Each structure stands twice: as structure tokens, then as C-alpha cells.
Amino acid sequence: MTHPLLDRRQFVKFGTFTGAGALLLGCRPTAPCPPPPPATPRKVLTLTKDWQQALTPQEIVDLAKAGNRRFVRDERQDRDYLHDRAATAAGQHPAAIILSCIDSRVPAEIILDAGIGDMFNARIAGNFVDRDLAGSMEFACQIAGAKVVLVMGHTSCGAIKGAIDGAKLGNLTALLEKLTPAVRAVKDVAGPRTSKNAAFVDAVAAENVRLTLLEIRRISPVLAGLEREKKIILVGAMYQVESGDMQFLD
Ligand SMILES: [Zn+2]
View 1 (cartoon, rainbow, N blue to C red):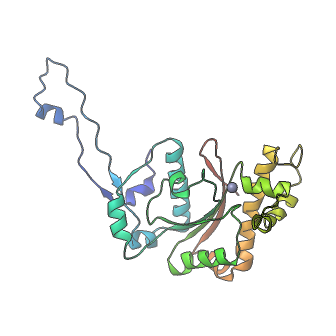
View 2: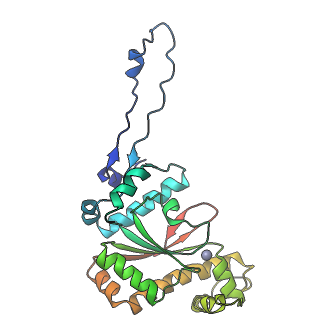
View 3: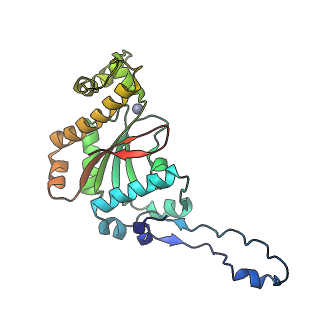
């Protein structure tokens, strides 16, 4: 089912073939008609400035949810990258900025069925925020017009496992220490507090998303102000690497 908001999006029609077309092929009523060729799918185009400005933050969140549902069902929309590349060459109008992990199984545009120019994409192992990433978010929202900051953790996260186990390796040691507040905050999961306990690992990842949202508000008065004015939404989600499903957190 197509999300109603998608009707507002621009499409390119490459022609469709309807049942009436069978008559044009000379098919006689006494002979079985060959099945018509499948309709050529319509292609979805990148966001325009007008559409970015017309969307509300909640509508953008709903679009993200709809895109993930299409990904889960393998109903991804066809895209015209040649058009999108040309259309965005002189400027971009993304709807959101997503902070997610570097994990190769979590490519934001794919799992949200989005395209070129649709979203900013910030990635760091363990999807935590620092001032540089907060500055990137401020650019995305205050300057470029994005209206959603989505922090997306994921199940079976190697960075979270490393933080739980206290892994040490070069610069990674200091990075993983940024995730330890989430490890300490999770108290109510049964079983060992090790990376072997998948429920504990995923609970820490979800807690890390919640703490990251709080940290964004703490270190960025710009983003906190935009949120207070209801110009943007800050939202968290957990991506399930097994099913492809993205569950938004309260
Ligand atoms: Zn990860």
C-alpha cells in the first residue's frame, strides 16, 4: 500500500500498459489473451525545496516509517538517479538528518527506501553525539531546512559489545568509553552483563539512543530551541538487523 503522503511526491511516468491495450494487439475474444506486460513502475524523484518546506516534522517521521515498511516488504520504489543527481547538483533540500552506526548492515538510505538528496547521513561507531556531530545537525536543520533528527541504533551492535566488554584498541578505546554511560544505565535485563547476552546488548543500544537524544539537547541550544519551537522533531529508533524493521522509541 502506498503511503498517502507519497502522493505529494513528484513522479516520472514512463508509460503504463492497461488491460485495454490487449485489444490493440489484435487479441480475439475466442482465443485466450496473453497476459499484458507488467506496468512500468513510476520513478520517485528527489525532494524539492517546496516539498521540504511543505512537510511537517511529523509527516517526515511518517514518511521514514513508510519507507522502512517498503524495505521490509521488499517493495522499494524505483528511482531516477540521473535526474536526482542533476536536480541536486546546485542545491539540496533534505528532510532529515540521521545519526547511525558505521555498521555495514545499517545503510540509512536503503533501509528507509530514500534517495539522493533526501537525508543527511551522519555515521559513527555506536551512534553517539559529540560537538562536531551536533554542529553537523545544526547545519542540517538550521541552515539546510531539515526538520527531523533521527538517532538510530541497531541490534547486535559491535561498538556496544566492545563497550560492554571494555575492549581496548588504539583510538577505539576512547570512542567506546563514550558508550559506557548506556552500559551502566541498563539495570533490569536478566542474564550476564556481557556481549554474549544479546538481550543486554540490545537494551544497552536502545539506552544509548535515549542518552544520545538527551545529549544532543544538552550540548546544542540551537537544536533544543528548534525543538521547543516545534520546528524540528528529535526522535530515536532501533533497527533490527535480522528483520530489517525499524522500531521507533517512545
Ligand atoms: Zn553498530
